[in-house]
Length: 53
Image (cartoon, rainbow, N blue to C red; front, side):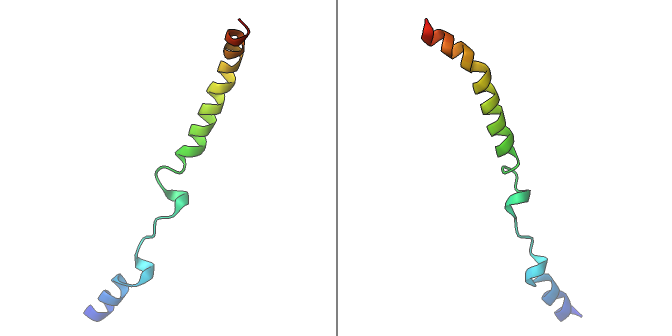
């Protein structure tokens, strides 16, 4: 029985492999990119007005 438990716990299926889809930072990147694009679009008219003088 102990041999079986050791084999099961050390099998490759028992080890959790971190995947990119479930990582902590990967879901934040699209949201962060959308936020940067949103702010850039909002700021574009003001920047154009400043450049135009």
